[in-house]
Length: 522
Ligand SMILES: [Zn+2]
Image (cartoon, rainbow, N blue to C red; front, side, top):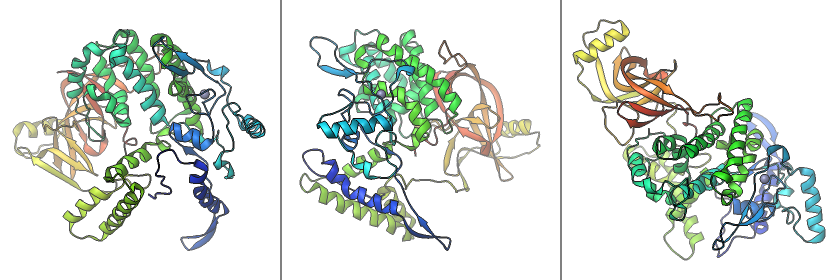
């Protein structure tokens, strides 16, 4: 990771001044240079073809109107309208729902016309204020090369807006409000033990205005339907499923375009209905941009690979380094340089304790440095249960048709850097629910090591419902299913299972999400 630019001041930087050296460097990359790859010299050229920004930065860099102004959408020509919800409230800029076939997409041609007129008249034309500094790059086009950031638009936009209707005091009389059930919701949330691949355990619903984007993501992907069950009014509950289905689809590790197009129809229903179910005030730019997300996904690829998450995370870490109030820029560069030197020095440290200390504190999680344990194939197991437990031995023999008299068992195991637990091993995480290659779902009871193989003995879960669909498109289903925990034991090899999220609602009834999110939270 490199800091390319840093602006310290009372206000936002002048983007032309700030970006000029960056654009000069990018132009040099466009001219190309000789590079030797495996002893073969080639002339390599690099082009910037896609970019992603938060909303204020986007309007500044593209030199276009902000998202809360007329023609503030950089993907279409819908101007939006000014809206005042009540006499007392302020004016908002909202984008009323328009059917998909009436979307007037911005194109290269009408951007060029608008830019020409804007330059000639000195006035803003269809949101275009003037030249974008990135226009100097060969293949960067402000409209087509700029992706919508789902982190700000969906997680901190749409979902945060919904939270305001559900929990804020000023909306307590709204039919969607669950404010009077917050205590029960908080209790359910505190009982959730997510697996380790979810970055954090859930925080209190009372602090939801402080949640970070990935907490909203975990909530909506995994917890919402379990936590809101029998609390959220039925109509709103059914309606929320549409958004969950859509988010699951666009964040999937692999996306089938035909499936995406079908799920888009559900999303369009969602945006069409939201104004009536909540209020016109909810139609802010993030809600409007939902209608452009599918096109962005098709054009840029899965949005998980093009978003502001990594940069925001880095900003957060950098801010933690700062203690002074003066000379902030100097302090940041000094601390950052020290951290980078220590980080690279750590590769030469032989003392593992010192090395761990340095690497855990100095590793910047960014686009090119990720903590990964891939490649490790060693198995370590802890907390050996009673090896000669006759129940374990007979169970193993029965499930495998073997005739062993003794087995090695344990309740916690780590393989390829991934921790698995038996549900008897109590921690703040639940690393015991899995789906196997043959689509069996289980909760781990015990691990058995036999002849260099690790077996997982589990209680089988059976699916009882998966009614997460839109009435119009009943075959489109979410990855969230409701399961019963049975008393039947099953056996799998550890290498054949994948951890999934389990939300216990009652003793024998639970929500299970089969959504594979291991690619999301790196
Ligand atoms: Zn638009």
